[in-house]
Length: 479
Ligand SMILES: *Cc1c(COP(=O)(O)O)cnc(C)c1O
Image (cartoon, rainbow, N blue to C red):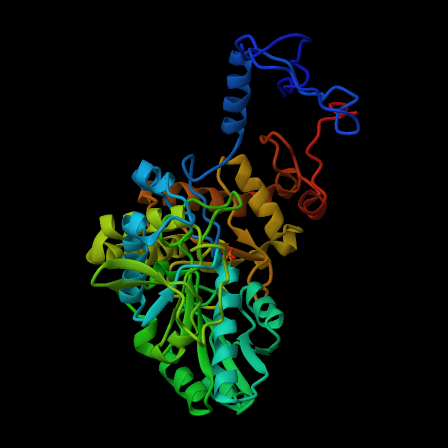
């Protein structure tokens, strides 16, 4: 491994040259003054540049290769969206600017809300939530406000066992009781079983569509009817809208409230910790409860309106993560309605192609066809003492990113694969060839998988500790 930037440090080397100070020197007094050196590396500018280039080369990212993390929609983010988000008119705006001076920004938010309503069939949207999980919380808060307003006491939210972990968490934070609904042998909600669970106590059914197995709920009309018949609401986790655009509009099938992730389907880069955006769409009966301020269009232009007596209030300072709105809006406009339908069709066909290529090599608990993703099981390799972890660690040695593993929980040794629409057939083939080869290695030389990865800068990490107590310092670089 090459030397770290701390090892390259030479006392007195500088990457900058500052002009002579021509201001009076003010001294900082103890206890605010440092008493020891900061311990930063001292290197020249070229070495600093090389340091960052080396780090970037070690990193794996969407611009380097396929990134098939299921449920994450790691697709190509057109770079032109970044240019749009960086326009001076947007970056120079102050969030507290008068409405009259921010007409372009307000119009963009208004139009983005309308576009999302058109794509999903929902009546109105709020752009405030900063992520999918935040959207879930907002959506469930809307449901709570709706029932409070009606004077109905409903305590339970039903959630299928295939759901994303954020679903029950959002429900619990909001003061409802999450209750699990079991999937049937096809990985779907069984209407007859659901009917037994739904009562006058049920506030909502929170379902993911397509579900996390990548399957579309075939009985969705019946499911919605059952929940509505008892006065409950249907919440749809639409974080993965990639399979539905131009094909199914949740509003048309009776969904009452949903969130979408702009940082998935709408091509905003993500994975590095933000910023994201999880707008929430509602049916007309929930619209009075949406967060304020709302962007409204009037004869004198666009303005922010706080006048909504039933609103749940703010869920974010100012209007949300505005630069994410710009990227999503640019993507929607550049792609167009027919283009968005093509996106979804290609996401579905890519997933089904990959599934058909991998079927014989890994188990498939719930038969396809799938939507934008599918879940294989590495259970068949257990007889060689090989687990899903070993398979995906070996994939790193092939220079490819791992899929999501061990989720959803209802599939043993799960490999959750979402190829997305932007990958070419050649790339999909390379990925399928690698996974097929690894299944062969598991039988012939399982130790290759147990020892993997051998080609990466670090080998197997203690994953729990790496996530919970990251040690980001080099030994001895700081006192
Ligand atoms: C990604 C995802 C979420 C959570 O979104 P965040 O922006 O990470 O909070 C929720 N549900 C599903 C189905 C998802 O795929």
